[in-house]
Length: 201
Image 1 (cartoon, helix red, strand yellow):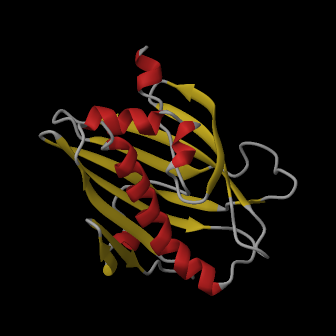
Image 2 (cartoon, one colour):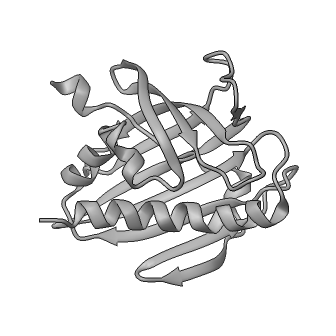
Image 3 (tube, one colour):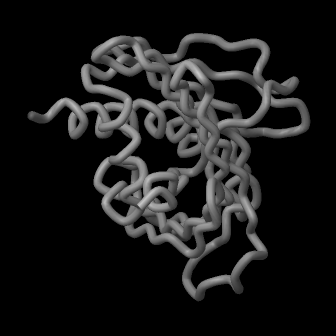
């Protein structure tokens, strides 16, 4: 079913935004195991934007299918507890995700509006934008206040170059040590998890 194939999923906290001012001054924070993570200061925010890039040895269609399995994607999204599809209309979807956080930080949840587009050369882009008021807040969770970002999948023969870029305002109070750890761990672990599944025979 074409509409199911287009389900724009995801994620963990976040995905692609049109090029904007916050995405200018990237500094490499981690370059390991074929995954490069860079960070950028965001004017007016105490939280950094993150960008992760890797090449997955699998065709774009396989990577795309893993992303469109909204519930199953929790297996590879960093600190994802549960995720479900709320609504899907053509190339747009709305997803609800609950995230684990270390004690004593209250767990977060997020509602993302995802818009998927595909260029003539096959490049797939999923824009993500937080819509915190889409549903009432859940007891025991702090709703993520803002997410702007994107996934970009570029076909490279039998492989796929994947870029995952996000800026998140997590809402509530988050210790600086956790925020600084999250912006590196989230893109690295998410891309590593996606790559592991995509490269399985």
